Image: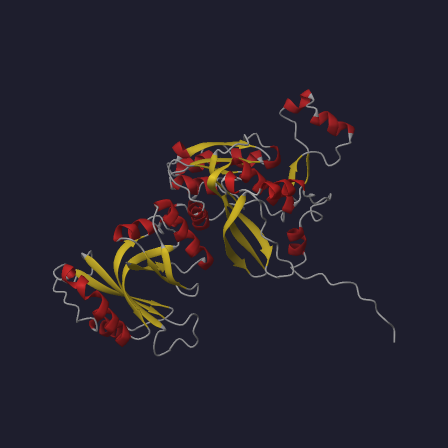
Length: 450
């Protein structure tokens, strides 16, 4: 049976990725029949009405799903399709209460015109009471007008759809987790909508273990916990993990939402010096790594390992246990960090587990940062959030079963030379481009006097 999905008008490149991931979680056979990012309407084929409800019951970017009765370019064509293809469905709605709504995406209709268009479906043999509140069945006329059309007074929509309401999403939950209402946040806390979408794309679900190695104030583990997963996290900055104690802490955020039973634990750790056992223990890894713009990226270690004091620190001199001890840090390559994330995920994800992390890039093709690859990980989808001259991408991978890994490619990947340098700018091309205004560097030109 065909169904019409009505998406929200946000994050267009994330929409299909989310419902395709939800189909995997629910074990539903999903076929995309028609979709364009310029339209919030998507026609899909699903095995049943129960499957349609299950598909979007935890969706964040979907509004509603409808049994698809017809799509056409004109109302005359739509009526002909509805009469031809759905007459066998009419008897079951003959005596129930109902109402017909109108949804005019990118357009508008007067109240009088809406009534006229609704009455054009009077041939439907519905004899039940018309109820505007809580009817047994709801039908909707969807008008799809030209995207960003100017002027707005076009005579006719591009397409018209008609369908019967089947189920709604959990889009309202975005307000529940709104950062403005959260007790403890930082400047880098991911907003609630994208945190929840990330958790969905990463396949967070009950009985699964999820981990964020750049946990900050806990946006991603909270989103995963909302969907029933057990959340773990770590961060090199112990201040963000500990917070101020009580309610103003990462743990306090979990308690705010009644999710404390789904917080596995958090600890202070650098990804490159992690105490996490390198075995397949995580069902998913979700994170928004630091971009190194506000301050250069750092990892634990000594900038000059030949320094005498550095060697004493590395050998574990007893004063490292004192509360006043601050571990030394050194500059860290942004691309090396991405490689370390992929390598860590390849070692700790279960087979078919997912890694979903955010990565910035310049919109200029000459400065665009390539999507990193790893022999143990298969790229699932890349979703993009655009900001003027730069964008950030949610990149999602699937951990391949060991039997599918190219061992020779893996050996070569581990031997590749890592980027070297000493300063934040040396090691972070995105940081250089950001402070350069994303202008392409021009080669030196010799000036010839004439």
